[in-house]
Length: 229
Image (cartoon, rainbow, N blue to C red; front, side, top):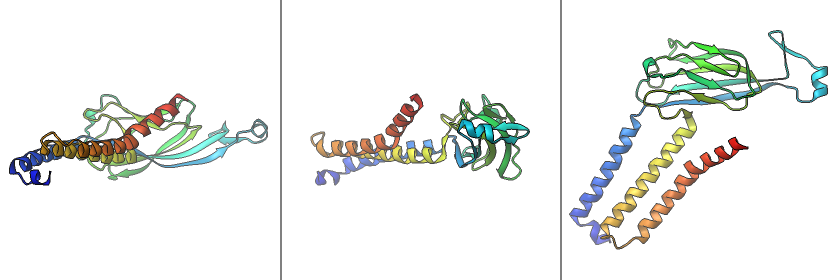
């Protein structure tokens, strides 16, 4: 097999395969990306027992509350392409789950500082109005909520497939990229062997799939099971 790699024809084939994969990955890097990050989630008040609720009263804006959490949620354009206000088919919606009740919401941080963010507070979510977000632009919202259960950022944006958590989206891109390179390399080895040696390419593909399964498929499967229970 080593002698085959010295053949200029197979070197050309492997080079073309590598170039095509690199171009494909480069094109993906120029896609629009919007991510969110939960910077902080801190319990402020937690009264769980019924007898405690009868003995202890906590007021917020003259309303009695039994639970309250402080959340700092950052939304950022993590791509290299600007997201225009006209790209929003629907406004962004920051949801805190079915059992949540938003008590207050304010803008905590802006980058750049002249970024103008407006939103409307609903009982269980925030509706964030469309705004131009250049690459690396971000804003952080401070929320005090009663019984938030699941933080999600939802919306329909031209060119943005999903709005993911920042860490999750980055790690999935790394795993997916590694998987693609391994499969491309295995395919190139199989071609270089004259389609006779399949053991090494098979092992490489199996290794790549194990990374892909553990880094992408398994976390989504666990999340799906948790949502169903």
